[in-house]
Image 1 (cartoon, helix red, strand yellow):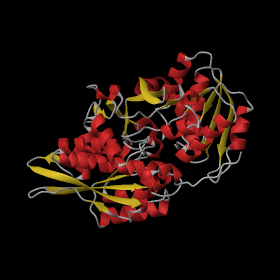
Image 2 (cartoon, helix red, strand yellow):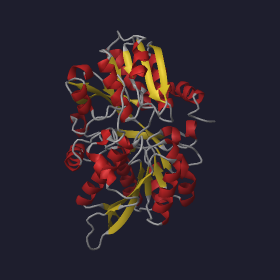
Image 3 (tube, rainbow, N blue to C red):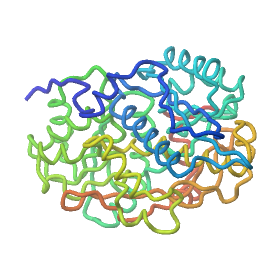
Image 4 (cartoon, rainbow, N blue to C red):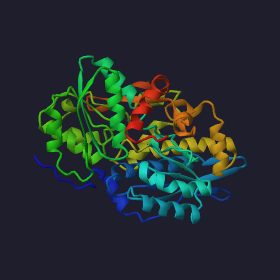
Length: 425
């Protein structure tokens, strides 16, 4: 059965929000007399292939700002700052990201720029480094000495992947073979290499892997080729939401009833409607819902995750995804740096963050990491949740020790990533 789709279909309610935005629109806080404004910027894909992540990330950005301003803003010495966001749709394109960065820094005076990952992130670094403006990526492989003020503090893709494979294979030792599927780009390539390494470490044979082009419309033959190898595990790596949704639907239609896993499982309620609760039972991924009881415990460095989740879903119903909180997580780390520095100046904030030991990564205390691999200690390495779909609801089953795993396996995994061209030097 051939699949055709509208790439904006996945965005549901958020698509309408994105469509109404113009480039560089400010979302003003409720400023009061005597309060100052600090601006931050979101350069994110509101349209294009990656919009399924870019729009929810921006919605989460706005949710964090709304809640932070309602709680009194950010205290910096004797001053109170309300937070304001500038947004720019980069369509996940380098040239548009750079245009947005120049406007945000040159005209809007933003103190922090958050981006999704890969090509747009790399494109803006020479300019942001020259201007000494902090920025953040979700892909740790973007880090480089040439980008001294680029942080990987919300996510550490792809290094958070292996603990989930370890957990799955220990939980289900009968799983012996896996098929890997991913789009052929800067997200898919390192993800596939990391999953392959983790499977091989656990004695699981990779019987099929395929990197399909971004132009793919028909996923039926891709799933057929994978299922022909009779894998115990069907792994979708780090594929974009609309790609993954269609592959999962095809796996259901073609009769696969084995174990599935991936980095994300966006809009899983929609997938349940298209397949069944039973088909998706046990699916393993890495991004929790923020109503998970585990996130209410004292070792979590995000204020009131449940309130954030409820406000997000009130403002943008039916659109919660893996990226709904990742930009917000960056903002929370940045806020703590601002408070520690007693300043909103990016270089003061960067210096304050680098002095933190341990540092406040969202899922617990973490350490600065990356110098031995990327030349800069700008990634926060700590824990990351392993999430399982249980009776139609995401549930954290373990906090994976990413830092511990990397201590034991860093050199071997980095060698694999160098082999596929994702780490240089």
